[in-house]
Every structure is written in structure tokens, then in C-alpha cells.
Amino acid sequence: MGKPVFINSYYTCQIMAATGMLAGRIALVTGAGSGIGRAVCRVMAREGAAVAAVDLNQEAAHATIQGLPTAGSMSHQAFCADVSSGGSVSELVQNVRAAFSALPTVAVNSAGITQDAFMLKMPEERFDKVIAVNLKGTFLVNQTLARALVSEGITGASIVNIASIVGKTGNIGQANYAASKAGVIGLTKTAAMELGRKGIRVNAVLPGFTETPMTDVIPEKVKATVTSLIPLNRMGQPEEIAEACLFLASDRASYITGAALEVTGGLSA
Image 1 (cartoon, rainbow, N blue to C red):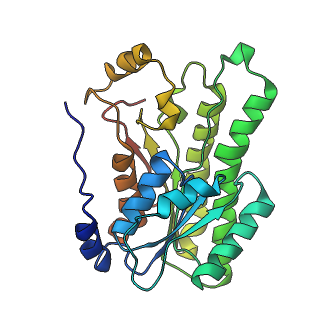
Image 2 (image 1 turned 135 degrees about the horizontal axis):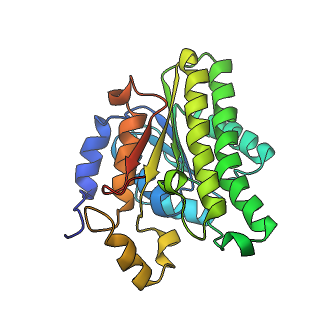
């Protein structure tokens, strides 16, 4: 089965942005420098959002916003932040608010890393680093942005956290990654319970095996084995994950919160 085709015409995007699903919204996207995060930025901009593209590598974030369709009178902005640091995340939210003169009402937490090793050989620092970025980082962005939204009485916001199907199934050589993504699922469900009455929806997207820089390092033989287990018989594309994020972020999902949406080509726990 061939790869899906996505509309990427500049002129088509310009027309769609004027009346898109997120027209007039500000969307904060972490991990925006590559992979799923970059695809999310493109989809959000296509649908009319002004994008705050966040990455530890600010040059990569700048590269992401180049060529994004304009969002009315607002321009897209690139930011550098370490999501594993509370101080850095607090400064990020303040900087985004200053740059756009408003808080984002859409956030997609895509920042994540892998540092794989068999559990019996995994150094403690590898476990701690993955948990710090993938789980603690997601917590800090959820907490900091939600606090700011509640403080200003802003409702109708949507947070989407990128987890992984590995958070449900586990995966050999990824004890740290699987634990971090399982934590993101639990965090999402708890945040949804606590923030629903504040007018903030929180959902998670669980990608399956997706073609990103993280999976580029996997040997082709291993990719072929994994692909054979996927009912759709192929790996996912970042844009397919981004479209799921868009739906959950938009008002079309206005009665959905606490969900963990699997986008896996049929591969399930």
C-alpha cells in the first residue's frame, strides 16, 4: 500500500487558513523542530492558527515556521525551551503571551526523546532523562499553561499530549520510553478530570510506529518485522498523527476529554 497523499499547495493552504478549524487561535506546539511536532505545526497553520513553535533547538523551530501559511494578522513565532525545566516552561508561556498578546488556547505536547537499552543494561541517567523530558515535560506544560488560562478566566482551551501505543503494550529495549508514555496517558486522564470544569479539555494521541527521526535509526530488518504486524501494512506518517491532534484540538471534539486516541494503523495493545 502506498503512502497517503496530503494537500500541500501553498495557495490552497492560504485559502483554507482564512476559514480553518482553528482560525483566530494561538497554538503552542512543543517538539516542533522535526517529526510529528513539525507536522502538527503545518496542520495547525493550515487551519488558521498562529503557531508558537517550540523546540530545544531554536534553529529547528525557526526552520519549521518558514513557509507556514499566514494566520490573518498574526505571524508564527519560534521559541526555545527545555520542557524538563519548570523555570524554562514558565518563561516560555510568558514569552508566548508577550509575543501574541494573548495566551494559546491550543497546545500540543510533542517534545520527546528515546534513549534505548535493555532494562538490565540501562544506566539510571538514561531512565531519568527520558522520564524528565517525556513525562515531566508534558506535566510542566500542562500545569503551567492551565494555571495561566485559569488565572485569566479563559475557557474553551484544548491540550493534546502525544503519548504512544508503547505506553500500553511496552516494547523491548524501551523500559524508560514505555514508562514515560504510560505516564502521559495517566496524566492526561487525570488532568481532564481536574480541568474540565475550568473549560479546558485534555486528550492524548497514541501514535503507532511512525516515520520520524526517532524511527529512522531502526534497522530496516526490524522495520519490516514491525510493519508485518500492522494491519494496514505500513508505518504511519507524521501528518496522520497531526490530523488526529487537529481534530482533538478543534471544536469538533468539544465533548471529548480524557480520551486516548490510538493512531496505529490497527496495531493495538
